[in-house]
Length: 387
Image 1 (tube, helix red, strand yellow):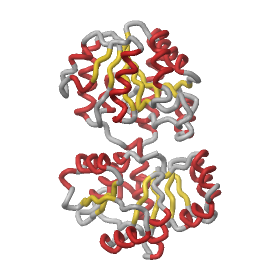
Image 2 (cartoon, helix red, strand yellow):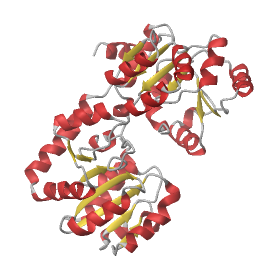
Image 3 (cartoon, one colour):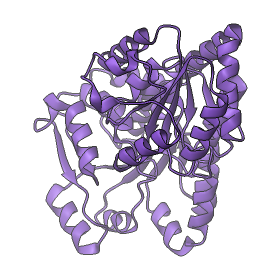
Image 4 (cartoon, helix red, strand yellow):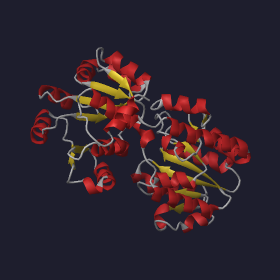
């Protein structure tokens, strides 16, 4: 699974605001990631923030990259562990820290099969800062002696983008009393069953907002919707803010755009987490909770087991074992306004209660002497470590 680059934005902004002389280089492996970084940090790009593509994990390429860039600290995000990068960094005396780290049970089993490669790679890290205790236990089992700290998930720190939220709210207003269900980051293995379940059991006077995870599949999914006999509107068919197709009688809106997930969430009443109805591990549901949208989780949330467990315990989520059950839960929320309001309130409260991982991570790096303490928000970050 690729890392969503925008998760790093809160930590990057904290670091930049902690000192006027602070600089950093962002490395990317995709054009999309580079574009997102440039858009999010526009004024700082080329001044204090520099971008580069991370080279292939080959000895000569990594050696050349480190000699040319000469970093003093390397932060690896979530699951971005590269054997040659770790090995060569250790040879150069460059400390590497895994931040916002996570390791699913499935990935841990896979790495255990390549322990001869994984163990020295992990043990070369100065430290791992992870999202939850279960990730810490798995990393320490793979690499005894590795220092691991738990600081929570940085995904909770992502700020809502007012323009996107307002856009989605405008779309939502055009729906009137219609119930809008968002299937977020759907996968091809689950879409046929979900569409069939939607045809049979959808809430009355409802709209399905379907956002596939992979853009190259937009046209194929559009054909799938039409083959199911559902009236389709495509996001790409209207302007940035007007949303005329949403105001019509479409039964499915295909979210065939990039970078608008917050708008789709704002336009919806509840969210079904894509990739969780089939054994693909699910997507992170925090983005929905941040806007007070209750979520339906499939049985396969092994990429985010701790978040899923806490969400269910808080009342912000319900579990569906099948697509039909997921649709039924959405219909129940439509029919029981009190139950829906309780779940929506729980979702917003859950997101608010878990913020602060970025500040805690920065404070930890400063406390370890890996990053300098300085003015600005550095003291705020240190205070956050006490939370």
